[in-house]
Image (cartoon, rainbow, N blue to C red; front, side):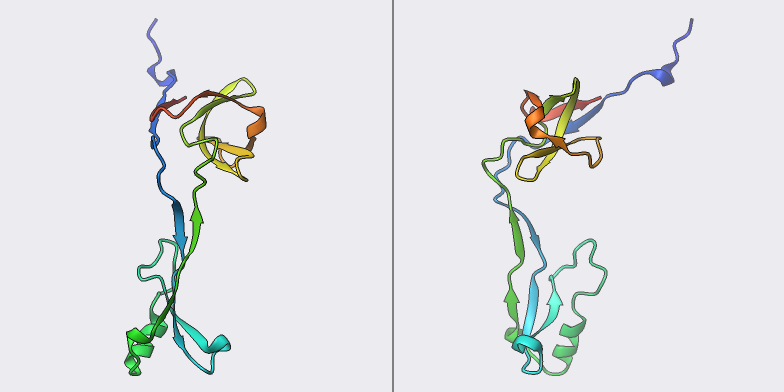
Length: 146
């Protein structure tokens, strides 16, 4: 009897980083201001981000180009640093760790709520309580996802 090759179970191979030395996880919204006595707080935002973010729909320099055309100089701009989010170097779970939850094997995609919940690869936005899982393997780099 011929085998049905379309019914075979396929495995996906996914690669995770073996280290995480980055202290800063992400930077968001660097803002450029000029002093403007008529504006609230004495300064007015003229630009956001030198290079626009992927999801940034508005142009990041419309007010800046008007300011320069009116004779303003870029050296008068004040830069407010971006908001940063930091990695926790002491976190217990890393991407690529494998764990067992309710008899099924999962691979950690990320941890949320200070490590109280885990999210698994291919499991959508379902939060899994970290206290109810058992780690079966630390991140080995290349991981089979079944």
